[in-house]
Amino acid sequence: MATEITRRLEFDAGHRIPDHQSQCRHLHGHRYTLEITLRGAIIDAAGRPDTGMVMDFSQVKALAQRHLVELWDHAFLVHAADRAVVEFLATLPGHKTVILPLVPTAENLATLAFAALAAVYRDSYGSGLRLQRLRLYETPNCWAEVCADEAAGGTA
Image (tube, rainbow, N blue to C red; front, side, top):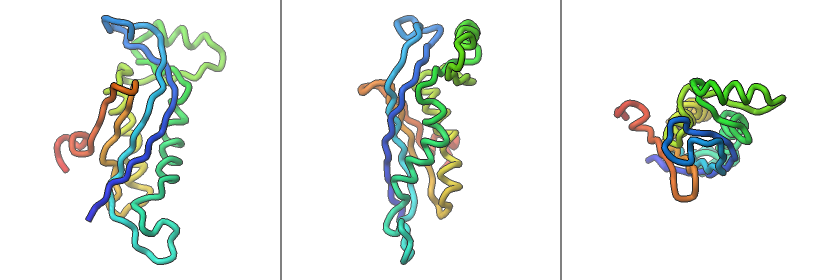
């Protein structure tokens, strides 16, 4: 039987949606909240510090920090095709800029985050552990979610 666990992390980042018809076309930032839901078997191995767990929550956090949050936190997330902003940010010495292949909407960021983390969790424990769902809140009331079944093209 599989069990799901969820870990929540927060980070701050700037972005803009270049062709948006409202305020989001301007440079601005958000306090993003990331929810990572993993699905797997509960570990039952005497003497292991994680026995009784799907994965230790501190390890869920450490892997997300290393492979995503540290990269995006306090960075400006910009689409590679947004040339004027890419060029402007390049003039700021030491500025933390992440150039992305997609427009940095909540939906695209969630998709990129899911892709970045899915293999990290699968390869960290094996034993059927997988990233089941990733939810990225852009604001407390607005989020995008990617689920494993949809991320795999509809196949489980």
